[in-house]
Length: 193
Image (cartoon, rainbow, N blue to C red):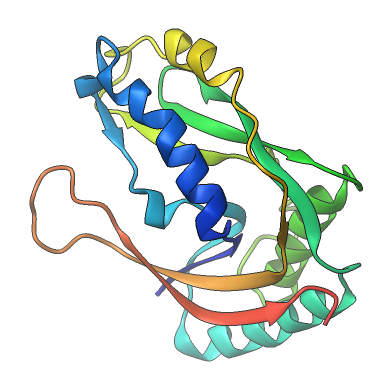
């Protein structure tokens, strides 16, 4: 099974961002993007790839320890946005207090993956907290700069990420173009718990 560690924003934060980004889907060229569904919006901390069932249990135990050792919920808000070249458009995050909390959490979830034998010993997170809104259907097909400009003024309400999730990514099975994977939580632990 394909697994990753993540934080999920609450419904209120997702609704705020979805309302704001609705206008983006009407910009020229928006049809050249595959828009992600709001119910799938999340922050990936570490991606583990294909994980055998027997190692998933060990990974879960290690992530439980990571969550327990965390300093508690992470206060943040969705804000602004950016792009990865012309491949992906994303919403950003502003951390209200401890600006390194997400980076530390990502590093700890990566270390858990290394100790569980799922990631190479030299794996270190190249972590940029973001929530993917859309992906280009092909390289260079859509200029994402106007979308980033439109996202710039967005500043959502503050919220707390209170739990760490281990999530299984189920690839699309219908063969319908544009179908997106399903994300199923297989473990969840309170931060600081």
